[in-house]
Image (tube, rainbow, N blue to C red; front, side, top):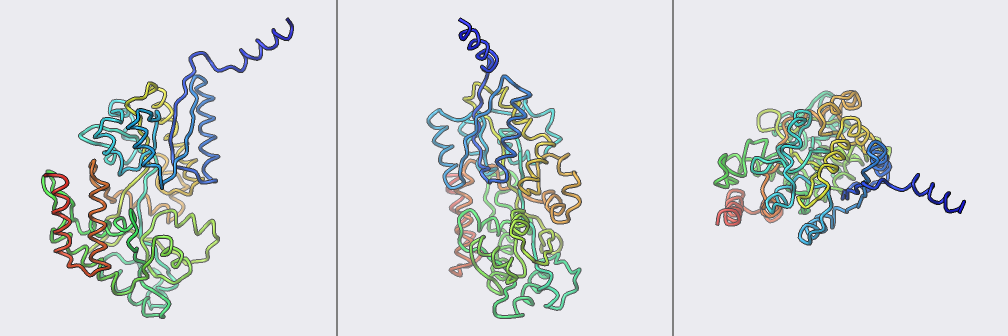
Length: 402
């Protein structure tokens, strides 16, 4: 009898509340440095909300999208799913994501990136961590090429001449790091030039594809010229490896490069600047990671509570410090001295303000592939710029309007 009493006492002390809710969260952050931070945030949330338990499933970038698609189609979607910004419209279009407009309106001014999760005037995901690309360059190579140590290229032609002067230094030195035909990578290297030229993929009313406009043609023409004149051509990793070894003058890359330099103790005279444009400072590529709630979820209120906790300024700052991420979606977090005191991190938050995201379109993954193949055709098979963009335009219009 005494043992039974002890058992019952322990059961009631440690058993979860009868009304306990378990929310399922699928996310992509598996790095050893960031997993403990995510776990600690979950622990803090569960401590503050003892009636809610968070169960995490880790996804990989190689198969994560496919797994999410299958989960939605089979009716087994998690309560919360992390989505790349390019994927949101795909799932919003099929009505598989909960409309979060009314859930986040009161707090929307405190975050950046809502445009990427707004489809047909409704918000379908909460911005979490944003991403862009800036121009990195090796100041030591610039000095060897005869430039002043404070020189920063602002225009395309300044970039072109500086890259070619560096390229002329030695047969093993290259001016520009140019991405090979790497899926989901190449177009992100070209689009900053496209958007810096003020070119558009679609007309303002979204009724026409205007890819081969004069501005679009000028952007790809210059990108081809830079590629042909002084490039080291490889995949993204290969370009960054060569840059960190002092073999490339200029590359376009993200904040993960800063993390590599720190983790690998790389000794490089690193400089960074905003994306150059045709006549002045240009624009860059904007993307990000978002948190969406499945329309089929029975725990939307609890899911929203966790999303707001995870994206709070304090927790975004904690996440960014652990992952060396430069661009939180939280306006308050981005103003922290952690970013403002580091010129490279500060630059990323400046670049975000003029970065452009791809159209929020259910067919974007297919459109992206068409654009990427067009760039490949011009760079690697010497396809005519205007004609190749015209062919891409026809494919996109057939996809969208026929």
